[in-house]
Amino acid sequence: MSYNFCMIAFDASTLILLAKINILELFIANFPGAVLIPQRVREEACIEKAEETPLLLELIRGKKIKVVKVKKSKFAKKLMDDFNIHAGEAEAIALALQKKVSIIGTDDRNAIRACRILKIDFTSAVAILIRTFEKKLIDRDEALVKLQKLESLARYSRAIIEDAQKQITGGD
Image 1 (tube, rainbow, N blue to C red):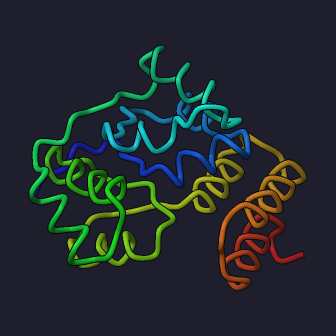
Image 2: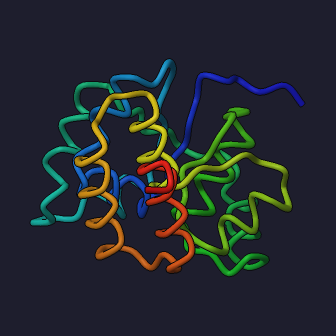
């Protein structure tokens, strides 16, 4: 299977986490290709009165994030049933297969399991934060502050957070 290595599809949780720690815009500005979300993810992520909604809507209106209709709705439903995932995660996976997207941004444990089984590469908000630091787009202190905020917002295991801290600090 050939992939378009210049596309990433996000589910709602990862999109929201990146927006909340203020690296979504930075990530998109430095990503070499298209950032896609299925229509369902747009609905899940752009909740009225949520602090990140204005930013997400601005990125969508500015065509920095492209909203795509998923054609494989029966397939998405099957993914929901088979992997016990929500509609947004299922549509992101279906979109990845439909558009031959090279990677999915997800922090959902069951969606990650589905990606592994379906042989779809994935990344998480923590991994994107680490990569942003490694590319010197943010400094060490800012990366650690953002990691701390991520830890408070999401359900990462202690091991994931400690590993991320080591990668950012170089084991200090």
